[in-house]
Image (tube, rainbow, N blue to C red):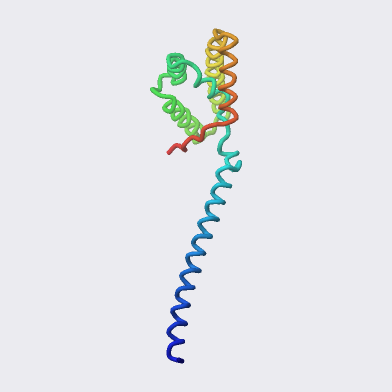
Length: 161
């Protein structure tokens, strides 16, 4: 009899051990599902899901031809908006490296950039107001509803590389 007890004892322990491992795995899976659901339906995206700037929303609502003409105007002969921005950045770097440093030239250049940006914003605003002015009251109400939805439920954008 003493020979049989040691054989059943390790077999029983092995079975209990596997049962405990399976139970632990199942518990961790349930906890993962609960935490995942809580994360998904919480407001953790508040900082990441900010609505786009109002100017960007208005610009996107213009028809493609108007957007294209406004972009062409903003490119100012550089071939692209990014090309113009890059050229402006190079000018700032050159002015910062200049010896002797000319603060007035840098200030004048920054003022010119601010005026150009303001002019672009004014042209977008004028085009958008013309677009809105041509709408009926019903169309404006529908548009306001869509705009409100985009503000309250912004789409997450993928980061640029």
